[in-house]
Image 1 (cartoon, helix red, strand yellow):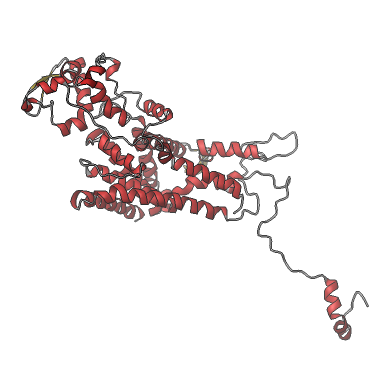
Image 2: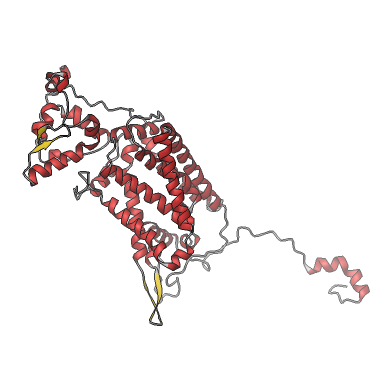
Length: 332
Length: 139
C-alpha cells in the first residue's frame, strides 16, 4: 500500500513536469520559479527544524553506552563508543557522520533450524555508505553548473570519478558514482520490498524519497548517456539562477525539466521529511553527549521552582487550632 | 535554545555551504558562450556547402559520442569511412576532417568546454593545432 502511494506520487510529479513543459510550455515556471522556491523552502525549513530541535531540553546525559565506560584504572575505557570527554564525543561524532559507525555495528538475529543466531550484518551499512558518498560526489560534481569557475577540489573529484575512461555507453567518460548510486539505491529499495519484516515497518515516507531520488538518478543518467541534451544551454540556465539573471534558453527538452523539477521537489520536501537526518545526526543526544553523569553536575533545565513550605511555618499558622484539636505540636 | 552557541555555529556553516554557488559568483562576470564558426576554411566554402557532418543540433548534443565512436572505429576496427544521415561519406578523422574546417580550437572547442568545465582527452593523443591567435584576432 505504502509503496504504491509513493510510486504513484513520483510518477505523478514526473508527468506533471512533462505536461507542464512539453504540452503547456510553462518552461519558465519549471526553470526559474520552482528551483528558487525550493531553495528558499529548503534553507528556511532546515533552519526552522534545527532551531525547533535546539529548543528541546536534554535534561540528562543519555548517550548509548556501546563500550566500557570510564571506570577504575584497570578497566580500559572505550573512548569512542562510550566517551566521557568532549574530545571523545568529537571523535565519536566524526566516525558517526563520516563512516556511519553505528550502522557498522549492526547485528542481525536469525532463527536457523530452530536455533537463534546473532551475527554482524554489514549489508545495510555498505548500501548506505555507497549511496551517501555517491550522492555527495554527484552533488559536488554538479557544482560545475552552478559556479562560473569550479574550485580545483571539484575538478579533482570529477576526474577521479571518471578516471576509468570507460565509454561503453554514449559518453566518452563513465562516472563510477552513476553505477554505485544506482546499485545502492536499488539495494536500499529492494530490502524494503523483499524483507517482510522491513516491509511491515515501511511507510510511504520511506518509499517516497527512494523513488524520488531514483527518478532523479534515472533522468540524469538518461541525459548523460542516452538522450543527449545541450549542456551549454543548461549551464546558461543554471548560471542564470545563480546570478539572479534567470533565463530560459531554447532547445532544452522535457527530460531536463523533469530532472530539475524532481530535484526541486527533493529540496522542498527535505526539511519536512526523514531526510532531515542530515542536520539531525549532529543533534542526536545518544551520540553527542559525553557519558559524564557522575563526574559533572547536570541540572535539569526545566527544573520548576517549586513553592515549598516547612513544617515549622505550617505549625506557626495552625498552632492554636492544632492545640484545640489535641494534636501534638513541636513548639508550645 | 539549549547549546545555542554550538547550534548557531553549525547553522552558520550550513548557510555558508548552501550559498556557496551564489557567493562564489560574486565578482565574476556573467559570461555567455559564443563559439566561432567563421574560420577562413569555412568562409571559403559557398554558403550551401557550409554544413557539418551532421546537423547543428545533433552535433551540439552528440559530438562527443560521435568522436569516441569514430576513434573506436578507426583505431580498433580499422574502419575509416563514416556515412552520415544524408548518405554523404566522410573520413573519420578529428584532425583531417573536423579540424580542417574548425581550425580555431580555442574559439570553437574550448569556448564551450571551458564554460561547462569539460576536459576532453582528445589532445592526450592528438597534436593540438597551432593557432595563430594574432592572425585570428586580425580577421
